Length: 243
Image 1 (cartoon, one colour):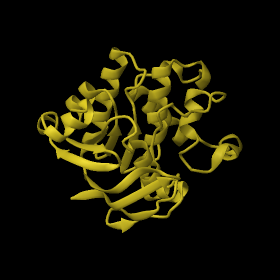
Image 2 (cartoon, helix red, strand yellow; image 1 turned 30 degrees about the horizontal axis):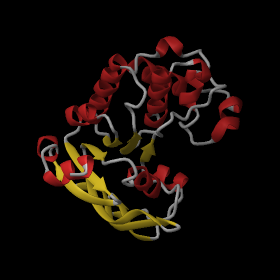
Image 3 (tube, helix red, strand yellow; image 1 turned 90 degrees about the vertical axis):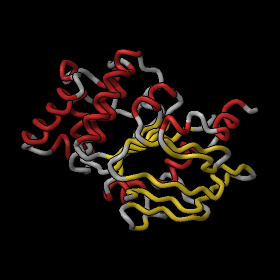
């Protein structure tokens, strides 16, 4: 069963066609990779799904319900979370406080005015433990390493218990040891029921982690299937190598 479905989606920026009549689907319960050469429209697809930019045409359905035209807050409320190429955290809040911000979706003022956050703090500490960064719970977000910021952003997204998470280059700039931890945690979160759609240029990371892979080129899907089939697809090799 498809959790996310995109039908004939298009987006232009002036004379540039970023997404061109693109159709694809993400199976429920999967870890699906979304790959393609630079400029193939991957992040634009993320921005269209999550409501950060408006589509020109086409449909977007989540759990068989249209979310096309909804803003980011309403898409988030439907159960879709996302991360960004550059980790977006609050540098002047502690790691623990960063995880508390999205819990009630009520902003920073509520974070500092709420009298009893014991349950939320307990959940946040459990998430930090799960990610193996509980030792930086009291450290300011801006003082964390880049890899720790990536983990913290993932933790913040997961605090809202989304059904689908869109990860934009989770492996980018992360050392191999930490990357192995990220892959392990994604696998464990997936086993608990979270579906992931991952944009990533690290092909080893994608092929080892993902159960399904979608390839886009020039704004369109050109291949999809199991990693072992996609990696030998002539259309994929042509798109990457320019043969």
